[in-house]
Length: 257
Image (cartoon, rainbow, N blue to C red; front, side, top):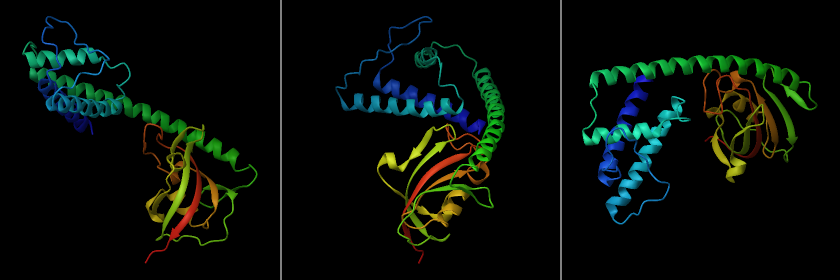
């Protein structure tokens, strides 16, 4: 992964340089150690190459941003220094030892990855304790049922007594997912479009709960981390060992053929 990120950064920089050359967006009158800076105004796109260059540069910026997010470096990233390096590379004014540069970048990314892994491990341990404490208290709440696996659920509304899906069936659902602190990380309800997926193609907590529900039912699920994504950090919001809460409405069941 470290090598992938480093390669991504290097490729991203090369792409950015090409994009700036094509669009001629690097101020050519900058000399010495001045930092490159750009105004907040949208550039005037008077030709197809201008439009291509601007969109290309924007896409490259998004590409690099993903690497910065993975390295947890987006906040406070010195963009002006970065762009100064791009400018000097294009103008041939940089005097950098290539081997030294590669060794430094590899070492920096490696150290950053070790730092991130240590932080994630610490956060994961904290999430386990907080999740257990939450579920221990939650199981005493009125209407909450705990299954043998540790899954907890509460019936919010009963349907008209439809069918329960099997493991091999496909379901149509509306849902909202939150962390135990109330943070919403995903919601088909907010998007205004239900989701269709196989019962056996989701996290274990969902697979178990769906087979207990009937068409039209609306339940609230409290899923321990081991029945969710476990020690894997799913996203910036869903950290390792996160206990997850879902409001799920089973709209339809499509039987396997």
